[in-house]
Amino acid sequence: MTLQIKSLEEYNKEYTKSVENPEAFWAEQAETFTWKKKWDKVVNWDFREPNVNWFVGGKLNITENCLDRHLEERGDQAAIVWEPNDPNAPTKTYTYKELHAEVCKAANGLKSLGVVKGDRICFYMPMVPELAIGVLACARIGAIHSVVFAGFSAQALADRVNDATCKMVICSDYNNRGAKNIPVKKVVDDAMALGCPSIETVLVHKNTGGSVKWSEGLDKWWHDTIDHQSTECEAEEMDSEDMLFILYTSGSTGKPKGVVHTCGGYMVYTTFSFNNVFQYQAGDVYWCTADIGWITGHSYIVYGPLAAGATTVMFEGVPTYPDAGRFWQVCEKLKVNQFYTAPTAIRALMAKGDQFVEGYDLSSLKILGSVGEPINEEAWHWYDKKIGKGNCPIVDTWWQTETGGILITPLPNITDTKPCHASYPMPGVQPVLLDSDGNLVEGNDVEGLLAVKYPWPSMIRTTYGDHERCKNTYFSMFENMYFTGDGARRDKEGRYRIIGRVDDVINVSGHRMGTAEVENAINEHKNVVESAVVGYPHDIKGQGIYAYVIANQEVTDVDAFRKEIVAVVRKEIGPIAKPDMIQVVSGLPKTRSGKIMRRILRKVASSDVSNLGDTSTLLNPEVVQEIIDNALV
Ligand code: 7RM
Image (cartoon, rainbow, N blue to C red; front, side):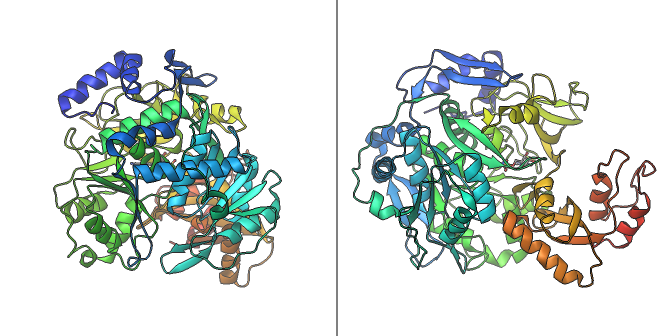
């Protein structure tokens, strides 16, 4: 197992070592894994290209590290504990032995359908064990998985399938989600109808049962393909820098991009960070409530915990079903030791009242985690007091799809914790603050743009099919730096506090979204001429979506118009992107070069119009007053 830091002194010592001699530091971590062939060089890097290679020349298979290497020591220990949506349905446990067998069967099944190393396989599945089994099966045979969150629309799914020219989609028939039963296969059918020429097979897992439309030749059942397969499947030899997966994420412009992670570095970093951030001990039960459709699920439900030999909980349901006590009921039932969730969930549950927490025995909890967005002070204290009973350090973990793993976080019982502060860099991580000209902002009690000046093993390698885009988005802003898109403060004691995005990316309930993406969806409405989307403070979601819309004719029924726009957004992206507020305007404030002055729109949406700054350079300053007068907040 990788190093597990145990004291502040050790953190300081290891941090210093990781900066002074990163290659020695990471070699030590990497040596704790199973390699088919050892690397020749720890890291080669050049941020200008960018070209980043970790454990160069090394050969491995991540599933041998997540599964095979545990069989002897902990083959009968629970690997995945699956908690169903229905609280009265049985919990399902897969030991490491069983998970190994299931992954091998699925891998053999995929092979039988012609899947080979390098093929892209899309997953559109709810939180069922077969999703974890399926992605591991891909990794077993060297196929590249691209998991699409099952809340995205058919259009969004088709876009992602086509961007990565996937050979197969793996989905469920239906999905249980709270009181709802969601037709998952139907969305895949709709995506296929929109045109996905690279798809040869739709592999359907029968989850809830129920009728599905069947395309002979295209559709295949998971059980017909996989159930009879052998429980042994040799792990494909992968190069450290072979692709492991693609995961789409939103940026400030254009369509979501496929962030690419590779085998060796991702394995080493997710395991190392999991082991340290959650201080996992043998026998612990660890639960991350994320969906595997997001990076948090990839790194900290599947790969990190399994490579570390942990017991990882996978939850099918939602925090409020059958009531707002569900998380705590599950914590009590499974005796969860580490619990990792998002601020939006904490705020939503806090708002329902303490009666949903009281009565549950939460004494198994040792460490609480937060991820996805800034956690506000009130939510932090509620989490600390009501859930942690003042006894559980909160790790406020900052990271991104692109970083692959947690970069800035307290280490529980090792470094201190402070509300709203992600605090300290992990060993091997060298964050810096920059001013807008790219000058280093040094010292403490300062603010700047957050960048990282040295590579870490799980960093983004490219954006699928468009390396230029990767370079332009992350490595062109500042020379020799990875730019995060976030602004941050460093407090008097050197802790980092993440302020939020400085680009046109918004964070709604911990879901990352590009304002341009939402605008493009809104503009698909036949009566919309132009739109501008901004985030605004929202009590539960962190940020809500505020859309300003110009119509091509007089809008007589504003409510109906809004509903139509929401429907268009649901169709283009999915329900997570639907605007909370839609204001019909006669114009948008524009600069002489035709750029929308979002600063003004953000202020209006935040009902903060006392100081709009200089509006005299606008082409159409008169629309500003109209927008203020009709603001919806
Ligand atoms: C893991 C994940 C990334 C963006 C990132 C930040 C925001 C994430 C925190 C946070 C404040 C945190 N990946 N963010 N964690 N902001 N404190 N602890 O969320 O790619 O979906 O989003 O999320 O703005 O850039 S993500």
